[in-house]
Image 1 (cartoon, rainbow, N blue to C red):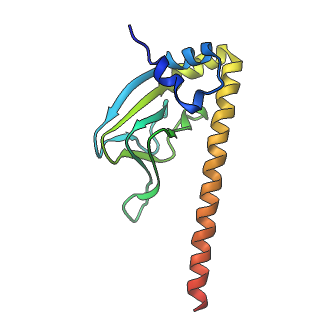
Image 2: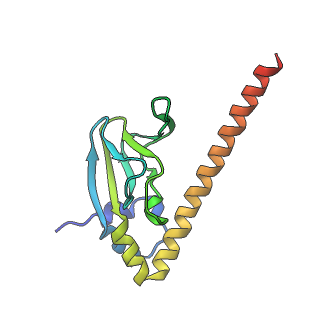
Image 3: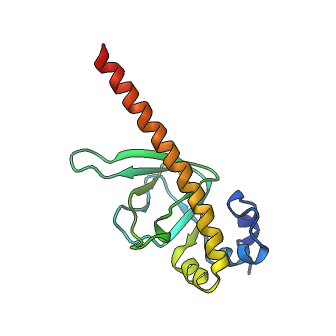
Length: 158
């Protein structure tokens, strides 16, 4: 039986991890594809996976009580998507929808959480990597807010 380990090992997310750690993560992985318009996950649903986008684009949306969903960001080839599997209560905080045919490595978060409980070094390694991703996304959100408020204040001064 062929594993996804060689495919996973090529991704920068696992660069520097030991071969046994990569093998462990690959043991929780599956190769999945989503059709255009198909939701990978929806806000409030149980979050038990994360995704490494191999090819395609995924829109992250926030629900709005008065409007259509609001596009937060679009992720594409090579990017990591989903951290809610890592933090109790393991619920998605946004929705993710394929904008085109999208191929991903889907990592089963329940499987990986169990393995991290047994191997704390693996858990710590993954936590550091996700913390880096989250820090980058917070920086991006901060810059978007600064830009948005700067644009709004220019409009009021005219």
